Image 1 (cartoon, rainbow, N blue to C red):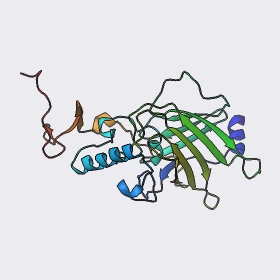
Image 2: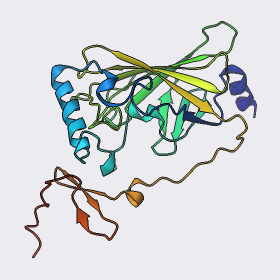
Image 3: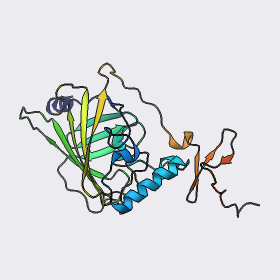
Image 4: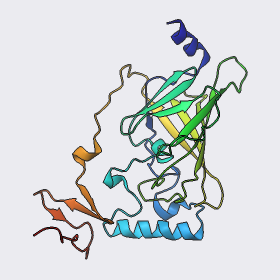
Length: 257
């Protein structure tokens, strides 16, 4: 209990369940999805993005692999399409998601490891700072590297570079005028971009909800999409394989008689 008390006195109050403020699940929540995001993409990756949007408009999945139960990974996780809880320990902070694995953010001062296997979430190191000098931390700075893919920034298939050399830098803090609002300033540095891209995610919690509500999430259980080779199909209500877009060819059935 003494340790819990020390944490409560030293760190900001991030308890309870956080949700997106609901404006949009687009990467930049201040702008509509799609081309209106005006992402600073290179010519090559702008073409990939436009092809993804075109394929989705025709019924395909585009550059969004979520329909195949591929993990969202970072930085897309921080769009918070489902609730998140933050648990703080002196050497490790956990971001616990309803629809994803927990993020482990290491705050013990150790450097980024050189032999850590890459993952969709990457490896995160963080530092708590006391910017206003009142003796209590108020800003959480996080850097995440060491990714694998494919990953996209939102459901439109807004692309990240296939080399997976993404670096994500974040600044978390509680709003000074409303303790139930938190901000995440996210900067993405990626070779698909012509410059670092910074957006601010805004999260809100219900102060009356002492015990947050969590729903069990199983992608495979509710997913009616089927990936065969490089094509995405669907299972109809009567249990048959069906196309997702006009003119789509049936899968190769050479091994069926």
